[in-house]
Length: 449
Image (cartoon, rainbow, N blue to C red; front, side, top):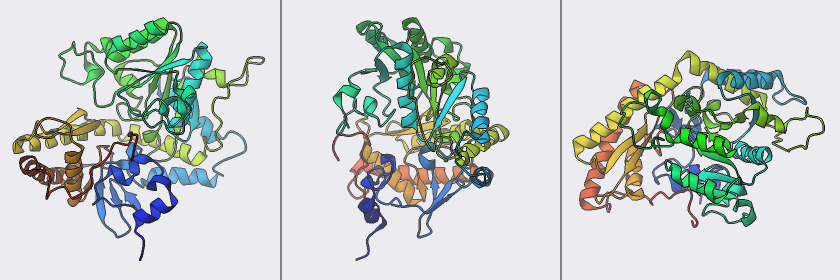
């Protein structure tokens, strides 16, 4: 009997994919188990079926799949040799570009994925301050697969306890919880690392401003500014992880959107329209600890990646930045997102289930929430919604907008949403039996399969 693609994948790849977010347990069973290619905002399975995609390469594709300008820029770098024995002109240009683009950045180290650079940021913070503890928000699910972080989660099998015992947790948007850590560990916290935002605005809820945060008159008093202040007063390194927010909230990152200035920041995902680039960047006084020019100083082995400065991916980064500026791509994220959010919420309201299904968060990176009739967040109903969207050839595990999502895609999406939410309402009224035809999707971060 011929094996399915899923069986073949699991036979040769642990988990069936190289990141858990692509796993079978993250999608309804009517989702394609394998894809052959992408074009613009669409993906195609080997059988030729075409899906409008909102996963966009786990948020890494911000222009669109197979963009010719980015691909050509990448190809030209491949023809130059791609990976040379010493630093390349392309590597220099990419580093200078990032330093010129982002106000807080004086120096940069490139790598291939986020875990490398977040771990390097932790190492730098400890080397710079001479302290051991790192504080992170408990609500933000992922910073690194290295022991210092993943060992502090429920998925700690295979990690060393000693590696994560210096990782402390506080609550996002609760500045008192962070202050309590500094009080409990005086002069021992090397740095604070957090994402600038996920779906929750970093305000202290004392402001009734209804516009976007960057225009808020109370912006200087938001949570991020308070974290920055606590770090400064306690001699801790302020680290912003911009894997998700970078080049989506603002071309200079969420740090510019909120008017903060981190000591270190990390980028990845949308840097190069799907090509593998990540970056650790920040202030020279901290970054230069990883250098070799200060003769006689004790060295730190910061990062050392053979492929970190691969010319093809950095060429893609340079071209992606050009397109973001030329086509006002970030503005498009916000404009399209606003239409998508209001459209989906209007449909939900018109059907009468606005309390059980709604879209929240930032228009440039919205999040849909599925709840049962008692108001509890429901993975089963989220699965049902995703399942029914797929019935109309829209794959929406979450919402990552790209420049390739335009009016045609918006209309197709809202039509699929109307179909899915009508089924959703029926399931609320009479139960999931007969409607949900798939195992319930599972959280990535769970202790047991």
